[in-house]
Image 1 (cartoon, each protein chain N blue to C red):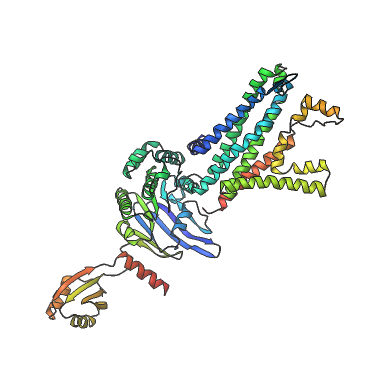
Image 2: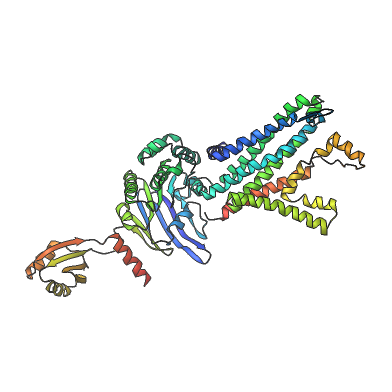
Length: 300
Length: 277
């Protein structure tokens, strides 16, 4: 598989503070990556380094297997960082034409991208008259001008209202469905969960996990059960070592599975023991729970 | 190179205040022709400035390059703000992310500086030529095209000065403060001159030492032309003062300014390279 970005042993120090510590990961073509981490975990710094705006302290990174210099490679990348930066006195079209000049691409995709993000009607308005959501959408249009090999988005929905967040997510999903590689940095987990296939998880500049989202935890999921006599159910489950972390709350019993199990099998087993379930749901942990577990484990 | 200039042109020309300043600058350059119209006609006293010989070839090259150099402050504002606005709008960050290298970024600004200086020089050349052809007492080709080194000096002077502005824009990142710094620097050079003249050297050595300071070296390139005027000289002779005439452009003065220019541009590049954005 084609490698787009390789980061090895990257470190960045701001004085006494280490923002990124010995970080390594690779980005392969065709996947959608999420970089996760709480605020201040080094996400933006990492992206800043590979995007040539922050100097690294040590380590290295290469674009496209080192086949191009960083600034040449960046012409094949579309990136949006934190907040949209454009010339406030220029219109959307003028700003995009400037970006075309810098990226050395023709101007014929301007119309398509502006239509994709829904700004074609406002194309001649000055950038400073735009709302934050519109600015963010213009940034996406600008990042797509060169039909990029990879789209890098840093907190694309930060500070937007629910409607704006929804619009941006729709656009991201649309782009992802076209097979573009995406690298999405965010602290909003449901955002990442909805679109990403792979994650890199950072905490205080260190990598906690990198790999597929589904392999993040070896967990088999958990069950939510209800019946007339919860305490009998709890007693029964506690004797069985296929179950772990049995908890009862407001009549609802949740139980974590140690091994793979068919819920129907459990239902049958319980029925034979004289317990009739009124509620049975099998769930996987959400990314949020997995993330909290992972960061919690590491801090002990 | 053409691409870099186009990029800068889009940025500058779409900015209304820059556009107004650039246009007024060139209008002012042309307005030097209005000096020709200065005419007093009070009874017996008749004075027509154009008749005093200021538009004679080759003196006009000296006079016009000296006077028009004062208008460079207009472009200084444009250059300082074109640099510092990139910081305040954070567009410099976006430019680099979009694939402009740091070297290209500085180069595009430096090329703009050179273009401004070049266009100004051409402008002054054309305006002076027209004025000279109208008012000059001499019109032999050999005289018209003598002393053209003043134009070269003017060009180098502008490039040096604008590079200084560019560097201040990057260093300070705020246009108002950068311009303040420029004025402060001018005051500082004046202060140093006063101090070393007072405590260390005689007047001639002081001039030599000051010739190595950036703003002073730029000023030295085109010296004041007024003492060359016949009228001024005859007045000086009458009061028994001998005016020493050393108004030529010296090669070492050009070299000093060129060295400062390269220092400013390299420092700008190093600053940009070292800073995290």
